[in-house]
Image (cartoon, rainbow, N blue to C red; front, side, top):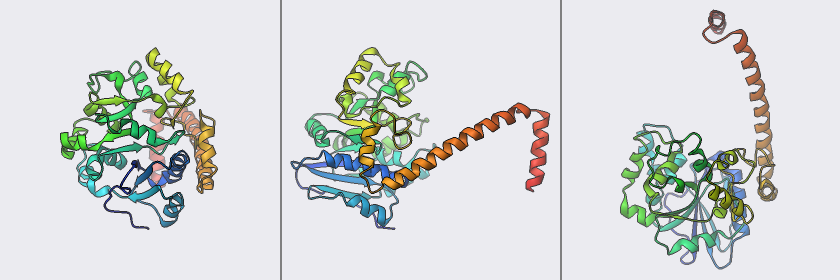
Length: 339
C-alpha cells in the first residue's frame, strides 16, 4: 500500500483552484472519470489543486490517476481519518466515514480559506474554475444549488418541519459545494458541528447538517452547475417540486455545466440515463475502462440474482406465511440440519 499525505497545504501560490473529493476505494474508477472531465475543460489561466480524501489506495491505482498531472494540475491523496476518528468512535448513529470527512473540512483543511467540494458521481462540461472565481470574493458561508429531488419530497414524504429550516425551499445538495472554510471556523468549533447530528438521526447525513447550520447564510448558484439528469429516480421527486423550480431545471438541462448523477441508477450501472452518453465518453478514455465494465457486469448479475431471490421468497411466504405453524416447524428442521 502506498503512503498517503498526513498534512495538506495549497499546492500553488497563485490562481489556485482547490477541488476536494471524498471517495471510498470502490469508487476510484469513477473518480478518474470525474477528474478527466475537469481536466478536459481546465484553463491555462488557473492552477487546479485536486485533493482526493480516502483511506485506502494501492500504488497501481494511485499511479494510474496521477497520469493526469500537468504543470497546472496537481493531484494529491490525503487520509483525514485522524481528524474524525474520535467522533466516529463515540457516534450515536452510523454514518459513512466520508460524511464525517466532509462535515469536518474546515478543520481538516486549515491551510485553505475556500474550496470546491465535489462528489465522484459527476462530469463537468465547463471550466470548474469559473464557478470558484465567481463566488471567491462574495460574502457567503456556503454556495450551492438547490436539491430539487429533496424539495419535491417535501410534498410527498418529508415534513417541512423535519429540519425546522427557515427556508425549506432553499434546501441544497452537498455534493457540489463552495465552502467558506474561514467563515465556518470563525463561527463554530468542530465539536459544535460534529455533535449536532448525534442529537437525532439525519435522513441525509451531513447534507442535513449543512442545511441546518447554513440555510440562512447561503448563496444559491444556478442549477446548471449541479444538474440532476432525467432518467433517475429523482425525476419523479422533481416532478413534485414547485413549477418555477421545475422550469429552472428544464432550462438548466439545455445548458449544463456540471452533471450530477445524484440518485439511481448511476451511469456505470445503467448507461441509458440522461447524459449517460457524456459520462461514458470519458469512461471509454479512462485507464479504468475495463474495470468499470467488469463492475457493471457484476452489478447486472447481482440484480438478476436479487430479482430471482425475491421471486422465490414471495413463493416461500405464500406456502409458509410469517407467524404460521408450518413456518415454525420448517425453522426447527433447518436449525437441526445446520447443527
